[in-house]
Length: 274
Image 1: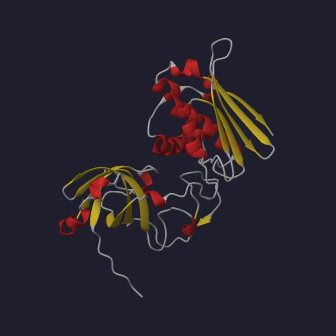
Image 2: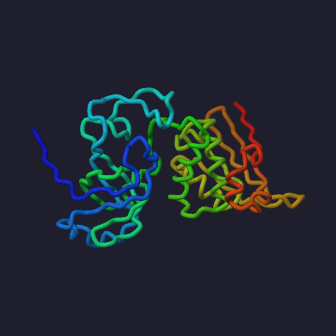
């Protein structure tokens, strides 16, 4: 059985080769064939789109691979168990942010397709698409810095604002995930003492629920006798307990770029009991 598919458009990107495309994608333009332009009617009412494209430079002979761009020490997976370009039919599914529409051109962010990639279809992202606490393999980047990048992207989608609390929460979560493993597992319990923004960030990246089963709890931080306000995240997994503490007053006085440049040792006190 054979299937014929005619592309509806193509990608315009500054990246021409798969090996140099950042893992989380970059800004790009999807240019739709003029004969399909009517299919874009009302698309601007969507903030995010699922884009199916044909990764024309992908290896179509591989059935197993290692996600080496994330961590070369990870085990081998079947291509159907990963979101990897090599596969018999290199159909890619990408969640992109729609920035604007100009005629037959869609300007998008977070698209991982290279220049000239044929676009097969576009569908709107619906709220019902979300799985709040999915079960997935523990595929972690090899470095703490890369893990921060991943968590920051998730946190921004949830919290929607780059603020001091988000930066601090992302760094707390990166330490916790590199220590305990995936934070969205049912056996990871979190208590946050801090601001509402800090809790919102950590609750979002950990996918913790207040019930069924309860995995997160929150307490607004108050000043101690010295006037200092401590922000604390306490993570528990089985017999392991990880407490990450910082003085929020000192950190909130820094600009965000300076805060992100600080080493963890300058910001946090970390206690890990196992």
